Image (cartoon, rainbow, N blue to C red; front, side, top):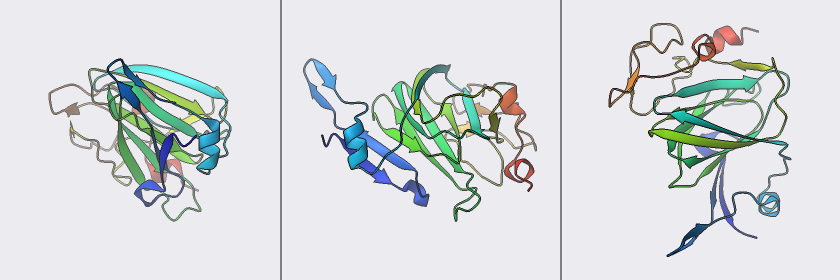
Length: 202
């Protein structure tokens, strides 16, 4: 018990939380609990996770911004290898911070976790040569339910660290690169998402 440190409502956005585990290290290496339901309940988290996912991505890969339309997922994310800049965007229409974003660096060194509740879009940019990304979800994946937002929508205004390029009115990755010259890499689908206003025109 008591193996985590929680910061709630990070970035002034209700529901977003960072979680730092207690790391026990010695000459052999380290040990930590990556998830403890009792500690989470004690910290005020009562969600149930039903699916664990893991991905591997190369430097310069940007995944997102993704959300689920009819089966929204809460996500507890962390990085077990490398470093990413992880971003959540508030899509809750009744929220006072609708459209606001918060970003955090997650790495194998800082071992931080980021909890993103239902009602947010999510994405990340890989800053290391390779990054392995893990996350727990509060709902199962439902094919055909995924949607997204343009990662570079100026209305949202995400500042992706070390990324250079000029917005050309679309989510295309053309012309964007990291400071060391690494080209931005995205899926075709992620380059076709629209901005906040166009996506939520109702």
